[in-house]
Length: 287
Image 1 (spheres, rainbow, N blue to C red):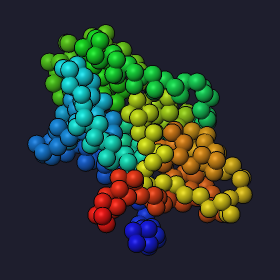
Image 2 (cartoon, rainbow, N blue to C red; image 1 turned 90 degrees about the horizontal axis):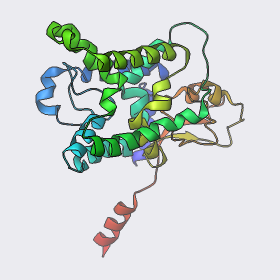
Image 3 (cartoon, rainbow, N blue to C red; image 1 turned 135 degrees about the vertical axis):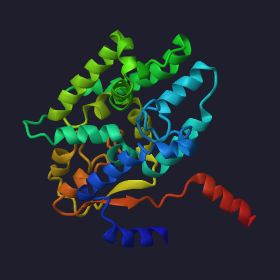
């Protein structure tokens, strides 16, 4: 029943197209910057990389929150639970459509210049290494290590704070200028390669990627329509052969493969799989 209603909805709902993507990203960028909502949501982890220290921040950054809780000796069940609940439905669709730093990279990539495809294959594992840095590094050093290098934090919190509060400028030292250099390098890189931070360095994206395998919201393939023309691979920011790996960990569900497919073999869809816990509950009810 749900799938039937979903298929009807898709015909009229355009936010899952590339034309609707800019609108969705803009709306989410606005949502993350509504300070009057911070009274209610400031302690709620958002499913994207957005700095808690931003003067306008609506909610909390999950990476920063996890680091803080580990430092004080607490296991971040609440934070991981909240974001996992969102990711189990959407997977990395949150990266493609909801993340403001991803939106920033998308806008930079629209600058007309010669473009390149990902050419540093082993660098993609850096984001998994950063997960270890976040967990182990925070416990050992008692410092929020990722926050000290996070370019999203520099863009949305560090720079705005210095603009709004001139007294802080005298305190800006080596750490801030190092973070600023990282942001500048990524900004330039994003003009030539699509979403380099998401592809190589985002630890939150690395965590979300595992949910691509099990999320309800999926990219569907009609194998009888696929002609293996590789236009999906050419359109993909991360050079993925989508028809061979629909749930690739690096896929940000941007939808470019769907738009590029000449035969309509690819489409948005919702999996019909029912989680085992639901099946068990139904059995208990029948008993």
